[in-house]
Image 1 (spheres, rainbow, N blue to C red):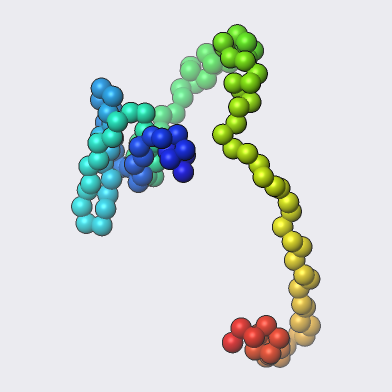
Image 2: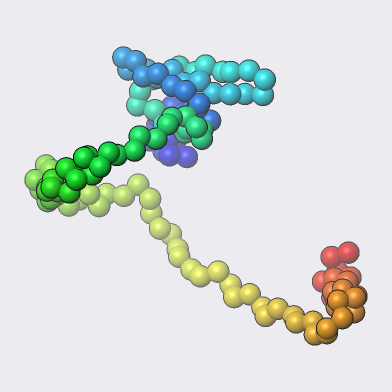
Amino acid sequence: MVAELLGYPQVNVVTHMEVGEGTVTAHREIEAAEEIIEASLPAVIMAQKGMNEPRYASLKGIMAAKKITIETKSVSELGLSDTDVFNQRVTVVSLELPPEKSGGRKIDGADPAVAAKEILKYIREEAKAL
């Protein structure tokens, strides 16, 4: 849906990909083969688990990252106006809570065989599920 709204091509279940000059070549597994798809950039790519190996930060990198200050910029410093930031592509038509569920039914009894019969009786006669 994101790709459709943005007007970008999309490829899903990607197991391997190469990015070239303005294109991406994506490999995806299908039933008994591999499909290779080439798409123009920008594109929306949905990766399959195992597409890459995670890189873990070293202790030296973690300690160096603690010393870096994070720069904060305002909307105007980015060359945008408030209307650009709040110009949404989604309009909320209505928002409401789901209907409350009715209370459950408790079947008392220490004997599991009697409780099972009560459950079956409820399913057949009241719920009419069987």
